Image (cartoon, rainbow, N blue to C red; front, side):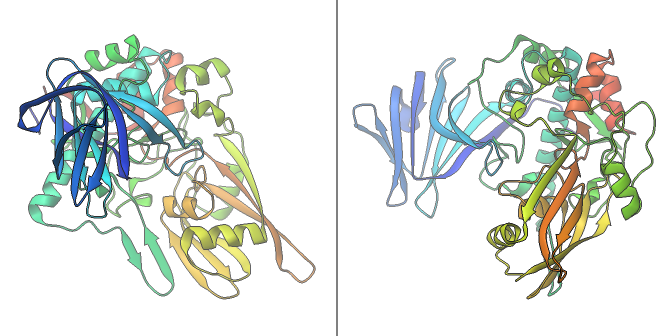
Amino acid sequence: MISQEPIIKVGIFEQYTEVRGDLIGKFNIDHNIIVNGAFHAVVENGDVVMYGGQGIELLRAQEIRCTPVDDGTFVLHDVVIGINFHWERKEDQTFEGGLTLRACDNGTLTAVNEIAVEKYLASVISSEMSATAPIELLKAHAVTSRSWLVAMLEQKKKISNLGIPSQRTIRTESELTRWYDREDHDAYDVCADDHCQRYQGVSKIISTAAKEAVDATRGMFLVYDNEICDARFYKACGGMTELFENAWADTPVPYLTNVSDAPQEFAPVATEDDAREWILANPDAYCNTTDGAILRAVLPSFDQETTDFFRWKVVYAREELEALILKKSGIDFGTLLSLTPLERGPSGRIYKLRIEGSKRTLVVGKELEIRRWFSKSHMYSSAFVVDTDRDAEGVPRSFTFTGAGWGHGVGLCQIGAAVMAVKGLHAEEIVKHYFRHAQLAVLY
């Protein structure tokens, strides 16, 4: 395990044809050129070409590194956040640390921020949580985020050293299984969006509480069996958390198991009847809250646009859903006839779903792939039941999805953890509730 604070590379964006921004303070770019102020960059003949505010060419190279001389910051304009989610939008964002602009083979640009882990975490906590969130929640989130990040870095190193390809798609004539993970990124360690951890630099003021939470837990990790825990998190479990292997690789993880999001234990979902009863119920779980004060304290402003996270409903006309599945999967199922859950986890999340159409029948998984196919962005979760309205000939007219939770459901439930903090539980109690069998250790 590590013994000193790592420096990480955060991918702010990629596949941009042009980047515009501002260097606030003095920056040293390659060949000891000191620059500041407005800049823009494009790719020409395989190189990044960086221009100053007056259109003066500053440097051209396949990769340009901008390193702050003192405590300079930089601004990048029109950064897309919430990519492919329902809150997707553009923002101007400000960052500490260094900036690397890299040319890609297809003539586009990648922007990478190099920054120390603890500074990165202060931004993550401020980006993921509201500045008014309870301090014990912020501490719990700091430990969780730090653990996930460094565990991912160590796992990436192992895979690279052993030359093991990371298998994420299994395709046969009758089944497609796909999952998505953080080590998908080759050009940097972690991306800045929700695919990894939401990181928006210092665009939003780093809250005093977030900084206090990071400082108070500096170098503190969840560990299990002499390894840092791959500590996952999401918005709301819907009452019970999910098993790691139902969202990602098939290998079970002892500290990412099914946990009731409540002081009492709920019976895990085992059958389709269980799933329907659970999803249509209104259990007294930590994340089952409509307390506006808690939600405003926990969720950033754009996340507050989602209010039906614990239980939700979506209705599609058959033709609308057929068109959506075709667009998202590239597969023409013809007339959509039925949607049948084949495998569910204990939280009710489906990880194998049979889609039957007049032209094609296919089993799809895992949970995120299912969510992607059934929404223009991402369905809130795969913990849903489907009710089908049929015409006199038995052909579906519409499909009603009734669901539970927001996110993959593995590990820490952010809204549940917030309610626990409001109820007076400490950070250690919160993380040990969600990550059973894990211990806390300070490693630097």
